[in-house]
Image (cartoon, rainbow, N blue to C red; front, side, top):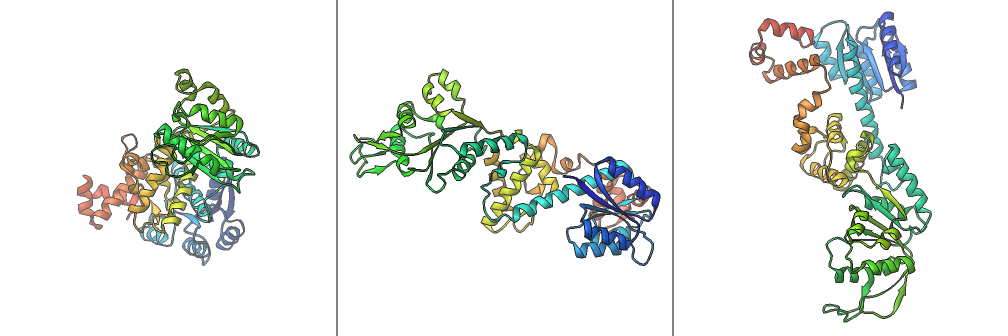
Length: 451
């Protein structure tokens, strides 16, 4: 998506320099040198960002334009420029909703960092709004992700939804195999019939046999009445066999027969039952390795793996996919729980997308659910809401992770500002806490527009 910016400055040389800079960075640039033109262009084109000079000719200055734009569009993201070091003006601009306040002459590297951070906020706000407007859990294929890898999986799901072919889903635990199985069912002609799922891991052969195929009365000690199995329940629909790699060797021949003939007998029964069921299986194991070890039947493997789909781990997905997934889960949790953050800050997204997520999507959802419970009435998910293992990426704390992309000058400005606030504006105490003289502090306050 092309980024757009409106530059508002009465200095022709400054306007030309800024225009060339942003055009080289592939921004779409709008230009204005007075208030009326600036407001007219903004209302017509709604650019992503506005860079606005404080001092403009005429009766309407930069602060007044800022106030007008923010009143008409509360989401307007505006960076103020000034040739004067005036703390009062900077405070007033921030009070009116300015995103940042930069002094001329501005270093291009500092300018680029500021606009990139501001655009991250714009893009994140768009995604927050997009997911907040979705009223139901998405079932469209676009929900899988936007990266080429996920778009290819979406294409495969679409093709396989139009057939009754057995599908094998591969991938680590928590990568969304159940979600994909649901998509395959909901986009198929069987969507009006049952979708039944069972996890094959950790169940005894007798219990799993009874769950899958049912049993007759008296088939075993506790079988006091006849029971239909899940294959019968799923008639004309889909059955999802999760963790198929853990299926006991006693049941593997019976499942193979069902796949080949769609017929089976209940446990303890003599009558063959025929069903019309589509089978989707999933595993986090290396089935080919299990075949070589003699733990999984080779013929069953080939019958299942007609068209396998491998789902990538969360750490292998692109930043955009992880961001979208975070938004979707957060929005869903907020809607269901009626509390907790409904938006996420750029700093939090940086930490979330940098973390490796060994538990994949399941771990991400668990973390976000914990955030919803512990964040109280916070409207935004902040870095401090995240668990320590995510905050301390590679030994970085939340603050250092967030500041890792800042220039040293910006880090110094922020630290001095924090120290000044901590000492209630007392400059003597601030200078002592920073280990510098009062004269040096005054120089830096002037340099960073903090005085």
